[in-house]
Length: 299
Image 1 (cartoon, rainbow, N blue to C red):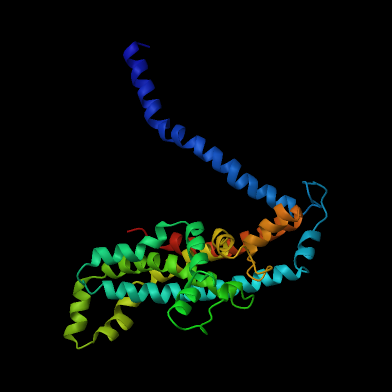
Image 2 (image 1 turned 135 degrees about the horizontal axis):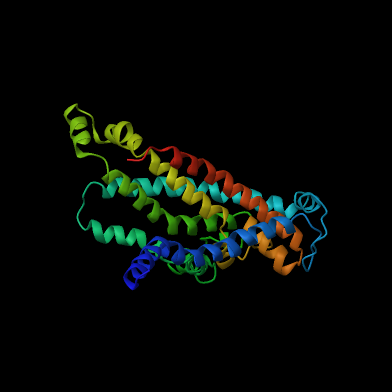
């Protein structure tokens, strides 16, 4: 084989296998540090692990203990309250803002940037900022009382019955702008000819959006639902920064429950069982989304 033929063969080999060579380290890392540790966590949830991993299998013992722990039911209830209000408020506010911006108003770029800016912040920053804002000794309550309303009371942050709603407020403030961007992109993808035809037929703005435009952008609703549900289920940093799971464990979520049992109470098996329950929930949300995406015909 001549030098030229060797170079040609090498070039062909390099062109064929370069993508695999570039991607393989990341694939191997993901396989080990994501799916490998997921498998390890699932296995640990079936063992008698406590302070340290113990690989003696005990079946569903950790799951039985998990579902007989009152604190876990508090976390599930809080997750239901937070997820419901968080998703509903983000969808409504995001859709409303998107429809307003879809009217081609002046300074649209600046307003869109203002709405989107909170999403650029981490949940730690958001939680810390709202912890200052809602703190009764230096936040909204203190300011309004200083304005001459001494009887004004807004102590949700330290009220066990209301603290969960402060997390909803902070979460909606951060994520509604992102939902707005999703809906705005969907609204802008609607053919203008359809809107003009509706106007010629005498349909008003409300009827046009309700009966024509929103059904067209229905896939955006599903995408927003999946994203918001994922954010809600794995909400950890926002809760830790804003309430720390308190007062007591009044604002515990499954993610903070898992952290507390794994690193504070040293009950690794129960923490792993709670992590598996979260994984099952997320999987139940993503499988329909992936199924719908795979069924969608290629354009």
